[in-house]
Amino acid sequence: MSATGVKPSGSLRANGHKWIWRSLIIVHLSHPLSLPLSLFLSFSTSHPIYPSIMGSTNSSSPVTRAGPPATLTTSERFCDPNADLILTSSDGVRFHVYRKYLEACTGGFPPAEIPVSGEVVELSEPAKVLEILLQFIHPQRQPSVMDMDIDLFFSLAEAAEKYEVYGAMNTCNTRIHQIVDLRPMDILNYAVKHGYSDLANMIAPKTVLDRRCLDQAIEKLSHPGALIAWLRYYSAWDKITELAIYQLSKEPHQGACWTKLNDTFIKKLASSPRLDWIPLEYQPGCRQCYSFVESVNPRLEKMYQDLPKFSHLIKI
Image (tube, rainbow, N blue to C red):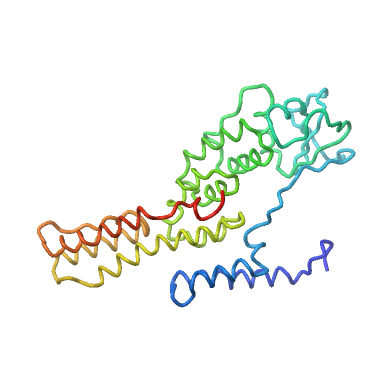
């Protein structure tokens, strides 16, 4: 038994359950009739390992204590001895800040009238994140996030939402709309977690284009309910592909034009399994190919238009 009261063998059991859970997803998506989505969803949401897969719902809150440890250093930018509050990063850097600025520019810190004299507020973010975040709070030119390292940027965006630093929230949200092709699954999780339904609806189609999207979803969609909603969304896209494959398997005739139609479809499907092959293309001059495509494309396009918005699958 460890100091936290959790048996060491629990991690082994959790890993085993995660393997089973991932296998159920693969079985369902590969052979949907053998494992109905309703049965899979019932298992995944009721199983004891589900909360640890989806991520904890508890966010880290600032912790106060009577004084800083001797190993702490002080930020060169935020070192004003007259500041009335000290924030400490997770890696031991102190930031001297004015509570009046925190109260005016954020919603995640206690108001200035609550006395905290002589106390240090410990935060869970590292110094490199707080160094940027606090610049959005004090009266100075705000930092640019345009060329920021992508991992640092996402850490900043999360911290801005966590402490409700309004200027940073707006700046990061604007930047996220400009990098939707870089980290679509991360952005979807961010949008669901922080209530940006329009962003979630815009980014969701991009999350199903990558052939590794299933692994990415399991790894990235940590907000409770996000993975289950994404699997429903993924399934809706799969039905369009299944219809196209089924119709093409009928082979209305044999000929070079029909072979070319199939080859074009397969190549597009391989490069972009969810989107770029709609509508089906055919070789001009073949009446049979033309009739086939004209009868199938409207059905595919209607299914595409009827795809649910991601925000309709989960409360955002």
